[in-house]
Structures are given as C-alpha cells and as structure tokens.
Length: 93
Image: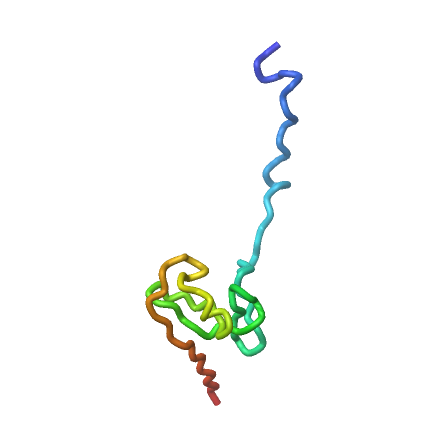
C-alpha cells in the first residue's frame, strides 16, 4: 500500500471551482448609513454619532455616551480633546 492511499485519510477536496464563490460587490457590514446619512453610536447604537475624539480622530460617540468615556471605545487611546461633528448637507441644484 502506498503512503497516499491510507484508509484513515480524509476524502479528497472537491474541485476548487465548486468551492469558490465570486463576490461582485464588497459589502461593508459595519457601516449602515441611516436615512439622513448619519451613523449610529458604537456604544448605545441608538443615537447618531456627533462627536470626534482627539488625538485618534474616531467619530464614534453620541451626546449621551460621550460623557462616560475617557478612552476611545474603538482604539482605547486616551481622549485629550473632543469636538462636535457637523455634517453639512449641501445639495446641488
């Protein structure tokens, strides 16, 4: 008996063409824009994000959650400063 034909060997893999799947468009599961284009707070996931944390520059907290954090909830960097995020909606027309 050869080394390749062992009775305990797992079955051969199916051809790669049967296993591979083609993804036509990349899907970003983390970012789901709301109707007005705002993103949900990463902590409560109820309110829109409206604060930017510095120095990491993550925009991830709403008004209610901002006061509870001294470290960024995304990267854990110490928050030295914050400023409100202002989204301007300009329409061409």
